[in-house]
Length: 244
Image (cartoon, rainbow, N blue to C red; front, side):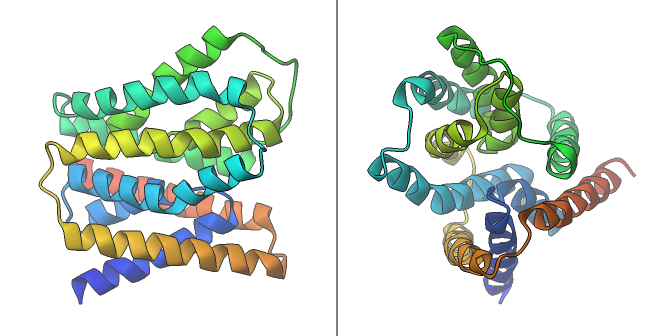
């Protein structure tokens, strides 16, 4: 019954987040933690749900030839290498500090959902900037147990890249970051494989359901505001559980 409960929680979250065009791992991690799952295992499960939900989008973008490979490659290489390094570093970072950083990230993501507008400005065409950005986001994503898309997408748009181009590149890059981070966590976290399977099925079915519901022309902006409120509440609840 416990695993069935987690399946339905992740199913609902994945459906809601897919309607907003983003992954649910950022909400899965604090919810699992607040229900008593160890923090590192919660991060591993969150990564696995993200991998289950986003891998197909990478294949589809490659088939549609929508991806600008020269643009995405520096990001993909940097995050592929540095995300698992960030995950390994999490072993040596004080857990309370890591949780505090995660709370800050929840607040940042909620604020981006609520207020950020996708507008391209003067385009920055320097590959080394993309490489450095990939290194920074990869390390932080590995440390927090997230895919990094919620950090990468607004950063690239603020640098001036066209939003549609960025969205396609991020959907290509993030699964590689998630895969290497998850494998890194799997090397030192005691896995609950039944929980992983329940989470994966919940993420896949929830993602498909969310995509289906999009055809009913639900307002993506309104959905993002609902998600932002959920993330704010999770940040407050997690901070209360840790510090009070």
